[in-house]
Image 1: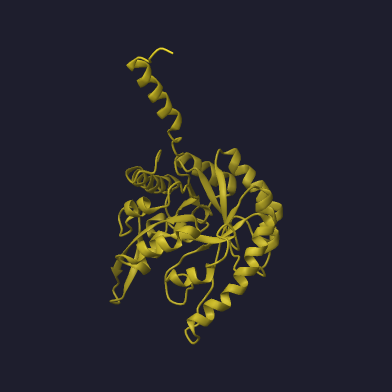
Image 2: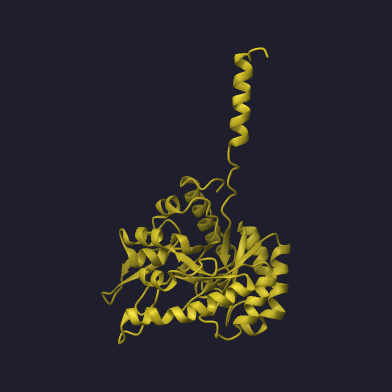
Length: 313
């Protein structure tokens, strides 16, 4: 066999490197939380979300939401079909489910499983200040075990949504870790809210909690805030547009586990949303103003993701 020329060697090496190179990651898929679209029916909400540029909708299947839990089996398939026809995904739903015994749990899980929706938002355990915290955390594991088994039977995963504030199990995040430890994170996981984690975690605590909960994180909620001192002299979190507050999105996106693609959910909790922040049925701002506000935040999040190296954002 004749010796290969230098050009042939380089060509072969280039072809080998090209073949071995990993495929580029798809862009992160960002949903709008449908609480902020409850002034519209599902069809109009889907059209507006698509026009703004969202990839999907996190649909409320809870009391006062787009889908009432008692009507999930009947109405949810039609709503999902409508959203998908608008070119959007429904990668998750937000529910009132706390335990396997919560009202309409089985009907909701059976329905989302049949629709190919594999994750849903769950949560709401409270801590009694007059009882031992370790005792309460151990007691919570029983209901979690039951829910995990039920989720496995339907092929779905519950994501416990992190909130801040007194009396909330999961605000400290280490407490939620102790409750979930040892369970299959594809049956009971976490919807990590980086703003609530920053409120509770301050300078460095959110970094630790993000690392601690990474194996359980199956979804991420995105919002921003800053601390504001009211006229009564009390400091409170003030929700604000993405990038105007204290959440270090750039660093958070950089510490996400490789390949995590969501579902990401964008929330609008600040007052300038004209009532949409509270899930109102009518707004004090125009449809166009809502769309401009939402589009601005969506654009900022995508730019922050791009800068953090989340390919394709």
